[in-house]
Image (tube, rainbow, N blue to C red; front, side):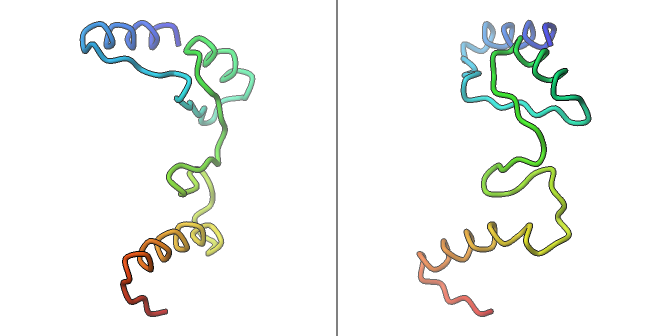
Length: 89
């Protein structure tokens, strides 16, 4: 993680862009929570676990059951109805 932090700092220097770590979320995949807490603290960002939601899509969950997709379908249907597009079930 320290090497990643050095690379990010180097990127910020070269690009004149700034990464807002307080808005960043890192998710450890196939690692223990204690490992991710210890290592991600180096980056000063939020830590999460799977499954988590991004843009109303659950990532890291089981996409097989219909209940997995219902929030996304509802969101799309709402936007389509706002645009007054006819939706047939």
